[in-house]
Length: 111
View (cartoon, rainbow, N blue to C red):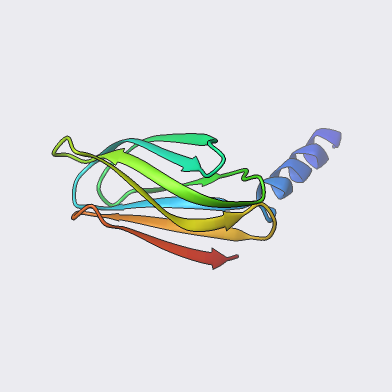
């Protein structure tokens, strides 16, 4: 019973008001070597996403932070785009949609 209670507490803490960043691959091809970097330099390696895939990571900014995404498209071109804003407090959810023309849409939501 204690293990079940501990598991419930851990799961509840994973869905708290921690800032999250979702990367959506709408580029029409695979993306490789995806890395998110916060303004203070902390990096989160996502890896690869096939076309149409998305993934979400919990991030730990110190205070206010811009977010930079770097990735390589199927032509071999590496792009680095900065934008978006996130804070350590609150239920920030930043959605980065990578498009085929190298444009990245940054949308901030509060969940």
